[in-house]
Length: 509
Image (cartoon, rainbow, N blue to C red; front, top):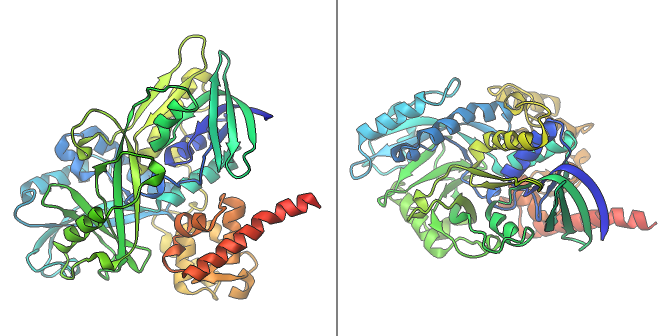
């Protein structure tokens, strides 16, 4: 077992919370190591509904503080990452039998005014008999409300936080599992295991952060030796993807007869994303899969609204994730708190441990700031909060200038198809030019693996974004898995295996 380096902070977990904390800490001058046992965003953080939102439904549960904090973060995150976050208008059709119209108006009035909205447009009432948003819906839906939230590419937001942390000096290690952590007076002695080679290394850390998401209790029971750990309530949320159900670019906020809500959202240009479900989950989070009952539930719910019913046979892809909610003892999964909880364990004469429970994409940056308040208190502050006005990699353009960025890229690289140029800006922002540097035709981008996925982009993801497998690229970094054939995906996997072996062969020589 190799003896490794020593760090100020070791973060366990490469989801949005772990990467957000690592970035904030590195920017404050701390030495940071982040250990993720799989790929970045391979758990909950790539399985969300892809929204940066306040949580309209939490208003009727009187969780005003939670909603206000989330609403305030929408425009902050949009300005930080205008390539992977964008404004989204949501249409809430109204009919008798659900929440009364006066209650919806009151809720949306609060939604517009308690969160410091500046750039996002306000709520308006729709006549669905005349508005384009009514065309895909059944004729009984004649009235609706339209309000603002934001869409987010969740997995890319995670990777960009990791990339920023690395640029600031953090050591980001994927496929690296924490298998043991021994606590001392001066710090932690942590054993890491490379999941590809089995090699182990021991490193030191003054402060340990357990941000393992659904695995936070398992890290407690395993690496930390706390056999009775039980802090999180695992709640399964599943989504289905179907061919595009309508032509406009707005999303729908639907209310089910059982009181739960779900969304239908434009997805990857040619598809519609429908979800989510909300039910307790028992078992290994790595094994979570959508159930036939969940597919039927989402199809039935959507079919109550759309003229053209959604059938299980229409599903082209589905995904399921486990949300690690803090277990507050609620009787129903949908009633469990969505707020985050941070627990600092710093007894006299022992190294500090911070554990993260709950949280969501929208509030990850604020969670990281609160985590750093506790870290600063234990280690001594280096620099105050800084992330609110710092853009993520590729996001260095005004939040309302996305179309101008697409136009500029198309002008400078005229061989790109319009959809290809737009996709590159949506994923990489100004860093799309790094991928295209020197190219004068698609031939200069190297091998095409299918659709518009070229070797130049794949190499960028491997060299700069920790991509290792075809799934890393097709389902987390790019979502091109929706359009590549099985043979094309296999070709990409073969290419990556050869690329992964090349450095080892060079070292052997």
